[in-house]
Length: 167
Image 1 (tube, one colour):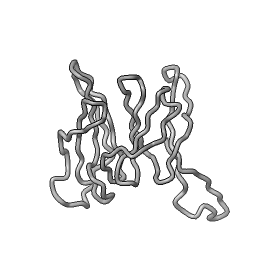
Image 2: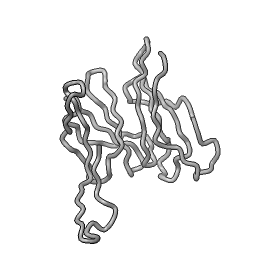
Image 3: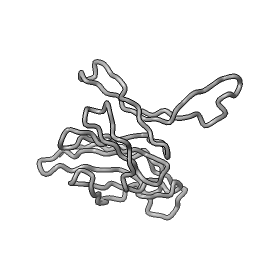
Image 4: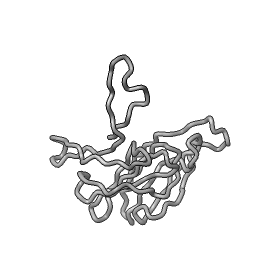
């Protein structure tokens, strides 16, 4: 989840709207019977919104975030999502658009997929890609361009979600 400062005059019509720019995760320790929020976290220079989380081999969690800094940011949790490292630039271009990661379940080596817009200009969301990694996100290799064959940047493709059908 994320919280953000209202984008309008917060004292309009006598209403005081409060908000901070922070992110967090919703965590269940009992298979969904109850839920709690993680310790909120933020960085001064950007928002961290619309995160996507994947489990690393060592049991830690990697979360990647949409930002307005022309690239994804990431953070790691080693305690099930309650506390996160300070979010850092991740090095994958992003035009301030949501992304989605998925662990591909197969009989071979562990592979992850990332659906995203490989652009840094926030006006360019016309090309939607899927990239794969076999090294837990250290390097990504584009395997498919799903949309955006033209240079028409008015065409927008975003908010991707993936699901694996079969193995």
